[in-house]
Length: 480
DNA sequence: ACGACAGACTT
DNA sequence: AAGTACATGAAG
Image (cartoon, rainbow, N blue to C red):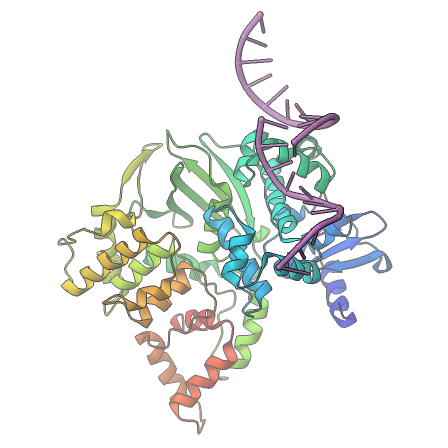
């Protein structure tokens, strides 16, 4: 790493700057430990320090994670790095597999990338210093470590929830990579979060700033009763539904700690499973992994001077890509209020319900329950109803969904797909230029500015300059 | 594309 | 005494 970069890191760690949390790790050669930028321990002498971009790289250099700042609970680097290198695509695919709970076959993954598994290994070795397998294992281990610290789950449950299939191997990997056995790790530090009745609580970090007010408002105006709700107007709740685990999560913002306290409650008869997926789900819905500092720096240079950026504005995700595209279809040509009304009816008619702690939970409908639905309770054009059925059919028939495929379905246009990509996949680079609100705001901006550019040029240049963060530009325009 | 080898994983 | 939970060696 270049030296001016090192100076930035030095300043960040001396200031314990949370904006750099998870973006680099400080390796201390004299102690053999690596830390986050925010570590409360007295800072190490710079001459003993080496900086790493990822936790895995630090571990690879023979260092162990610090017991105080716990690098395992730092915000992740977003899988979407904007740049379309093969390595970044590989990392994004791995992340995607993690967040859907699929197991990862490196041969299959390489095939999808159009390279051989051998070359993939080579790329990982060259740029990250490890094999893809090691990378995957280490990521699982760090999540397992988080569960050890923050929950009372038994080791076996933790191993399975972190994505290991054999406890034997989990123990072995844990011991060799992190230096301690799982129980030793747990007894070294005290659990700060006691387990809740039929659930558990995790603390999820972000890098500040975070504009919770705007995020809260966005979620609240789009909330579907029984599927999403707010306690006291501040605690956000939403249901989740996997094959074996159903329930809801409850997210409370703790601005002074740069994170959310998130409790997961499981329905009776459903097991505590899919924790890694749940963790990613909440992170995506609340957009916790965004590097807002960097994004806003880019946007500042892309927009006209008259336009003011809302600091800490995040792009809220939907519960799934399926939910996102349905929200998009029902949002065609109507107001937000109208769209939410339609969505509520759809969810209440076709989504399953279940009680947990006396709370009635409603899950977003499965694709199979929509593919032949008459949807006659919704007042909207028949073609749009057909579009919903078509999309549902596509989702039932395809194990691996590509939202771009939906473009060929009747009633699905670029706006709908882009919206779904932005909210469903967390794609940061979607510019919803065809959106009516965006269009109007852009026109107003164009007139305001004394530029000689045509509107088309004005818009095209802004779009280019905002790369790869166009989704954030879209949200900024919506909130203007 | 190949064989040798390391390491992942199971019982 | 049986059952549960965790860690680990040997071998393939």
